[in-house]
Amino acid sequence: MQAEPFLDNWTYLKVELNWLERLLLIAVARQRKETKDIDRVARTAADRATSHWWKGMVSLEGTASYDSPIDRRKSNHSDPKSGYFQQIEARIRSSQQNGIELALPELCDRFSLSPFEKNLILMGLAPEVHRRYAQLYGYLQGKESERSDLPNVDLALRLFCRTDPEWRAARSSLTASSPLIQNQLIELLLPDTPLLNRAIKLSDRLVDRLLGDSVRTSEKPGKRLLSQKLPDLHYHSSGASFSTLVLPEDLIDALKHLCHQIQFRSQVDQVWGFENFESAQFPGVVTLLVGAAGTGKTTAAHAIAHALKTPLMQIDLAIEQADLMRTLTEQAPTVLLIKSAEQWLSRTSPVARVEQFLTERRSTNSLTLLSVRRLPQMGQIVRSQIQQTLQFPLPDRAARSRLWQQAFPSQVPLGDVDWHGLARFSLTGGKIRAIARSAAFYAAAESSTTLEMRHIQQALKMQWC
Image 1 (cartoon, rainbow, N blue to C red):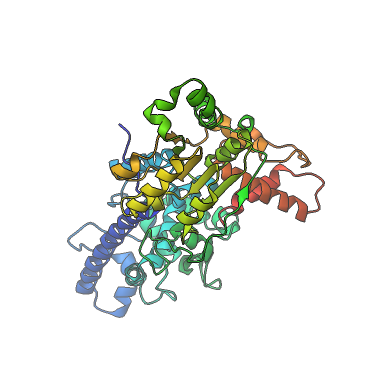
Image 2 (image 1 turned 30 degrees about the vertical axis):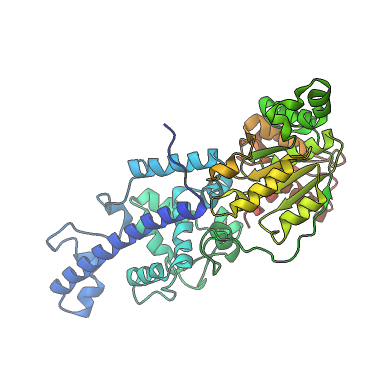
């Protein structure tokens, strides 16, 4: 049975942050008990300063605690192999399979980050979400911490490392050669202090990428800011055709059949006599395209328009709203692609207006493609206007290899590129094309005569920066 996917990136982050908060509260409780026990035994300031040496020899009515990471084998830190972590990983995989983008897991995949590095990023992100994390850090780090609002390296090592080898491996991940430092994803503040005292701060661009528009705006999570200006609609054309699509064969066949319903309507209904059938009363076709960003929905729409020898009109409801239905009705394009169609299809949308618009589209010989990232919760009235739903899956490894090779125009002077190696990265076609173009800029900036694998690797890393 497939695990339940996360609703969105923000829902996933809340689960991870709740786990971190529980870990911090356990550490606070332990530190309070330890401080109370030491105060009961210590007689002088020197006793308190040297408590990390003598507390293992003096009974404090409990399990002795040590600063050395090698002696914390009995801690209650969660084992990454425990049921809780297995459930989280299963939900992450399920979300990815359903086209739900989770920024932190994607970052970990992109840079092959260790569990410690992933937890380090989560720890640095937490104060950007709520001030209580900064307060917990301040208590655990004590008065000697110069930036108590941010976690320092010592606290991260104490929280996430249970053995001496783990501690050494984690510390080495904070050297200048680590991907987090090299790609400027994190910054270690207070450079003139020992590494353990240095504060961990995420770059602003990484924070924005991890949180998206969920938390850092004044809007509630999930609420979009919409442009109020009248839409400026344009027709689009491209060289996309069915032969260039990298999609499952049955999906390509279904897309071709959409064209057939426009191309051969006169023959089927008027010449062959199907005009009296109920379905013939609505010659227009309304189809829902479901898939993650970059899985080929827009390219498929271009291929359909190309096959019908007509321009494609496309609009994005995330940025265009005002008076849009009237404008589209007046222009009456043959092939219309509506991106971010969740804005119209959800139960909270103006159902009567949406139904009227789709009915008008169906009354003409036209094709309306409604593009969504995942299947929305629709009311029965709106659902009845949609004749077909097509699912766009994430590309598999073989498909990604083809997408990489298609991403570079024939005039690009390519060097020796490891297509098989690139295909192992779990990327959509849209992201692959964006990375390919970014790699070309790296090659051009070097005045290189060829675009090499190293340029693509640079673009892969900087996709997160």
